[in-house]
Each structure stands twice: as C-alpha cells, then as structure tokens.
Length: 295
Image: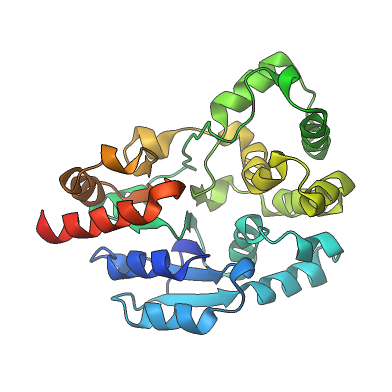
C-alpha cells in the first residue's frame, strides 16, 4: 500500500467515525487511511476495523493506543504521565506515523467528528508543498495575559520553559493570533523535524507542572495541552491556509443557524468539514444527513 498521502483519524466516538466512513468521497482509495483508537474509549479496534471494512475504503490500517504507548515508552521516555495523560494520542499519533510508517510524505490528521466532503478538494490539498493549519482563537487564552489566574500562569510558564520562549507582549499577541486548531493539521515531511518533535514530547512528559495540573484538573488549561503543544511546536510555520484556501470549514454556530441545504452545499464543496459545535453536534449531524439525501 502506498503511504505517501496519508490521512490519520483519531477515533474517540464510533458514531461520528462511522458517519465519516459512510460518506467517504469516491477517491478515498487515492490515500492511505489510518485510524487510531483513542485511549479514553478502551479497546475498540475490532469495531473500528469493521466500520472500515464496511466502507468503500480498501487501503487502511487500524492501530490501538496501547501499541503506540508501549513503543513511545520503550524508545523515548517511560514515566507515569505518559499513561495518565489520556489525551496523549493527539500528540503521539504524529510521532508514531512519521516514525513507523514507511514512505510517508504528507499527512492529514483529523478528529473523528470530521466529514471528508469534496474529493477533488481533498486531492488538491495533498498537492500542496508546505504545512497547512487552521486558526482557532477559542481556547488560546485571555487577551490580557495578566488577567489569567495564577494557576493558569504557572502552566503557561511551563510552556515557555518547554519551548525556550522568552515571554513578551509581542509574543503573546502573535500566539493568540496564530493559535491553531488541532482537529485538522496538514503536515509535509520536508517541514517536519521528527527528532525535535520527539525531544519536545520528552520535555512535555517530564514536566511536573503539566503532570500535576492534568492529574488535579485545577485549571482549564489542562484541557488544551495538546493544542498548545502543537501550536508552539509548529509556531514558525503556522498559517491559516486550510481555511483561507477553503480546504476546511469549522461548524461552530448554533444548530438553528444552519439549514439542510447550506450544510449539504458546505460538505460537497469542502474537503474537511469539522462539526465542532459540541452542545448541539447530534442535531447538526442529523441535518447534514438529511441535506445530503434530499438536496
């Protein structure tokens, strides 16, 4: 199987993942499809395998999180935080794919609440020669850094230390402006330093502040470790080209702001549609399904 054009999906919800697979574009077999079982849902590799077998996708592989954790712990660092940080696949999947899949050149990482819509647009994305991201300001932090809680500042200070960043007002403004959504990232191998990425993972998992705040859940910042890790790692390469070039669309509005017609048109004209409206996600999916059938 050719793996030069690889799509990687982190599966946390089987219902949303099945919807993605049931609505694959016709050219899905032009890509190598990798599904990774998110560790928070237990071992669902058999269910994930069955969903893919029932789809039109013929070129795929399913990996369990246990395998990835064991490889990371044996080759990079084995500390309790690697196991306790149950959102770790969001950052470990990139390490695993570039470390172990031979022939990988371009990788698109996705959440499972994404619909791959326009196959032509998806093919066009994989013709791009540099990394693409999508800005998402929602979880970046407060505009006024000083208004963050002392706990939040303590966590931020660990991030600056982890990435050897000298904090300044100018940096904070740039960070807020560039902050990237982790639900979809397009990575080109020539712009990805695996050795540096591995070293940053090691620093992250060794940090006692990160471990403490994750285990205690004492600040909202602990829920965004994955996004902040990726934003700071790719900081000099961040752009908004997934959105600017209309490869990707984030659905964030309230359900009543969408119509079946508008949703169907969005899916059919966009490579990546991320249903990111958590409080009413199911209703939006129902509208998308009716729209695709009737419009």
